Length: 78
Image (cartoon, rainbow, N blue to C red; front, side, top):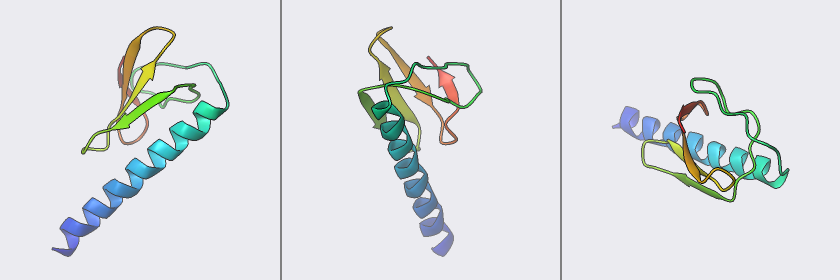
């Protein structure tokens, strides 16, 4: 039970940190650097969502695309 709760806690913290990081970067109005398999370094976005697995989804308003990030902040697909 402890390991299950511990994994859930770590997942919640990583989701929170991803949303906090993306929101902080979005306020800086930076241009995106999108490369699959690499961390997303700078991004300016208005719509950010996180699913139950910890993946983040960012709506790129300039290209009208949805960019998917894993828990580590690496671009999975755009």
